[in-house]
Image 1: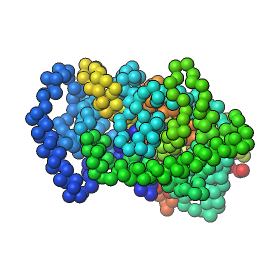
Image 2 (image 1 turned 135 degrees about the horizontal axis):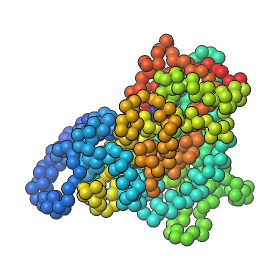
Image 3 (image 1 turned 180 degrees about the vertical axis):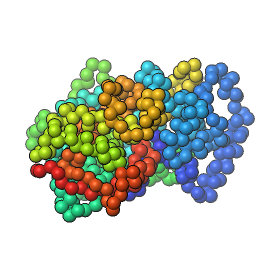
Image 4 (image 1 turned 120 degrees about the vertical axis):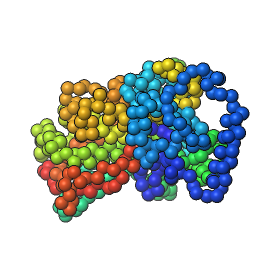
Length: 527
Ligand code: HEM
C-alpha cells in the first residue's frame, strides 16, 4: 500500500489516484485560478534565482515539464506503465515535478535498495496529505511524519497488535468467517449460479477486518462502515493544496469543510465504540482478555513508558490507529486474492497443479487449516508470483527528510520518492524474458523472500516504513486462496475461454481489477 493522493471511488472499494486529465473540476473558478497560477509562476520564475546556481549539484535526468502542472500530463491513465516507459529513456532514477512537488521515480532494485534500505532514515517520511490531520487526528502511523511519536506508535503496534501471537488469536475468526463464505458458495454451486468472486471476498473481508478491529461489523446507532469509507474518500480526493500548499488556506474545493463534518461524525462513532469497550472491560473485570484491536490498544493506555519511549498510547491514538488498520488491511488483501484468482483462471495448468498440491497435502475430506499453510510450497510460489506480476500498491511513496546525494545526484529536502514496484517486477534482467507470463515455477530455484530484504521483490515495502501487517496479510491471502481452490472447481461462465478473461487495471493507491471477475463454482471437497 502506498500513501499519497488517492480516492475511494464512490460506491466502490477502490482508491483511485487522480491526475490532471480527470482531476480539475471544470468550473470557472478553477479556470481563473489556473490562469492566476500561470501568471504567478511566470513572475516567480523571473524573480527566482537559478536553482542550479544555488545548488551546484546535478538533478537526476527527466523530461521537460509544463508550468504549474509539471509532469502530471505524462502520467496517463496507468502511471506505473507510463513511468516505466519513460524510465527506459531517462534511466532508473528520473526527475519529475508534480505541481510544485519535486519528485524522483525509481525503477530498478539497485536504486530502490539505496532509498528504502541504505539511506532509509533519510527517506522515511510520507508525503503530506492535508486532510489526513483532520481525519486521523494527526496521530496515525500510515500518513504520519517520521518522528519520535511515529517510532513509539510503530513499536507498540509491532509488539502488541500485529505480532505473531495476535495473528494466532484471530485465527478462529478467520476460520469461522471463511467457513460461512464456503457455505454460501456451496449453495451457489448447487444452483449453478454465476458468482462475482471479488464481491464474495469483499463481504468476507468486511466481516474479518471490522470484527478484528472493533469486535463488530457495524454499529446500531452509526453507519460505521459508511462513515469510514466517506472519510477515506476525502483523504483520497484530489486536493490542490497537496500540490500547491499555499492554496490550502482558501479551501477552494471545500474539502476541508467536508472533512471536518465527516471527521466529527466519525469521531462520535469511534468514541462510542471505545467507551463501550472500556465499560465492558471494567464490568466484566476481564483484564488480560482481549477481544479485538480496540481492547488491545486500550490495555496499552496508562502503561509506564519503556526505555527510550517518549509517547504512550492515548485515546486519540487508538482511534487513529484503528482507522490505519482498516485502510491498510482491507483493500490490499481483497485485491491480491482477486488478481490471484484471475491468473489461476487464465492459467488452468497452474490451477490444476495447485489443486493437486492441496489434494495430496490436505486431503479431499477436509477444509484447509492455517496449520497446513507452511506445507504448501507451490501455493507460496503462486502468491509470490502474483505479487511480482501485479504488485498491489504499484508505487511505494516516501519523502526525503533532508538534502541528500544519491549516486552523484542532488535530492533536496521534501522531494517525493516513488518506487515503481510494477516496473521492477517487469525487468527481464531479473525475471528473464517471460516477465509477462504468470509462471510460479520461476521461484523454484530462486529463494527470493518478500519480507523487504530482497529489493527485486518488495510488495510490502522495505525499511522502517515497511508494512506492519505483512504477516496477517500473507496468512489471509494464502488461506482464502487455498480454501477456494481446494473446496471448488471453477469454470468461466457463458463458454468463455481462459484467454478471454479480462485483465484491465484501475490505477489507484492499489492496482485493482477494472471489471468484476465472474465464475461458476462446483463443489469438490466433501465437508
Ligand atoms: C496483501 C496485503 C498487503 C499488502 C500488499 C500491503 C502493502 C503495503 C505497502 C507496500 C506499504 C508501504 C510500505 C513502505 O512504505 O515501505 C504498507 C504500509 C502499511 N500497511 Fe500494509 N499491506 C498489506 C496488508 C496490510 C494489513 C493486513 C495491515 C494491517 C492489519 C496493513 C497495515 C499497513 C500500515 C498501517 C502501513 C503504514 C506503515 C507506516 O507507514 O509505518 N497492511 N503496506
